Image (cartoon, rainbow, N blue to C red; front, side, top):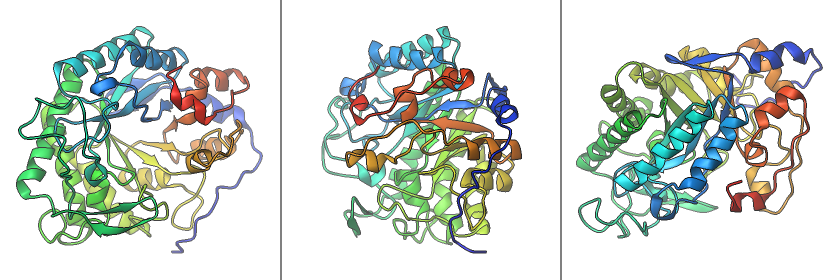
Amino acid sequence: MSEQTTTITLERHDRSKAKDMLFQPVKIGTLELKNRIVMAPMTRAMSPKGVPGKNVAAYYRRRAEGGVGLIVTEGTFIPHWSAGHDENAPRFYGDDALAGWKHVVEEVHAAGGKIFPQLWHVGLVRKPVLEGAEGFFDGDPNDTKRLGPSGIIGGNGLPLEKVREPATQTEIEEIIEAYGIAAEAAQRIGFDGLEVHGAHGYLIDQFLWDKTNVRNDRYGGGGVAGRSQFGVDVIREIRRRVGPDFPIVLRISTWKQQDYKAKLATTPEEWNAIVTPLAEAGVDAFHVSQRRYWEGEFGTDMNLAGWTKKLTGKPTITVGSLTLNNSMMEMMEGKGSTPEDNLAPLYKSLERGDFDLVAVGRAMIANPDWASRIREGKQLRAYTISMLHSLE
């Protein structure tokens, strides 16, 4: 099968039925959502010393009031010293941070919403300074040590290179345990489920990618099966701790910040070898990240979320530049972005049953009421890069 990327055809068709589908209830595991619209996780880095405050709670509450079916929070660091790299990004450990998250949950629930935290370990992307982590772990959390499968990392145009020794078996086991501890905390303080960040070149993705995982043990040897084992063990540990009915979503991608053109798989068979073991380990749904959701995969007009659903039988969430006309990198380069009605391929794929839910990122920063505006046919506000500097 060809590896060529094919764009889903933008043909005219009756939108009303598909639009109605967007606002129908849907389930992730045992949890029913009022519609199929998800607020995508977006790092905001406005939680000083890792503690989400009242402004963060109000930010998420506004999106719940705007009609979204599910909110996935920005990435939040699991309780391991190596997990994080930004003193203003939220953590998911410590009484102060967990109290902040509990208030977020209460505000979202008061507005009739559902919310998952995104559990995050950045792996070798980590920067050395993490103010606010002192006292939670043995040793100095602000040293320069970083953990990853083989000590190999790159990015931002830099070549991949070995920057440290591979993580030890003990270190890997400690990180897996930390995911489980965070999952228990999410359940305890009232979240409706959780998402694990396994995409975009962070730790789980570093294990999945053959360029950053050259181990020859359980967590790398044997090709795709070995490289998938860390993610499988993380999901199993979370499932063991939260039980069968607490929803688990896994965010996954082929592209990564180190390489936008990277591919974890070039055929459906290769992708199946990655996602099916993860589904069997306990994933209830996959959040499949593409830079542009309308681009087909494996030489077909079905995107990666569609292929993931077809191969695993699990519900999937699609995401990538919905109602925007520029990518994030184009925005960072100073190019503006105006609202764009690029919903035709979305509606077509929904009607076809390719995926089950739709995640909206930057457009929901500009439009907290994105769901209501789409439902009522109202014009969307333009997104600008300056909006990242506030929590409106």
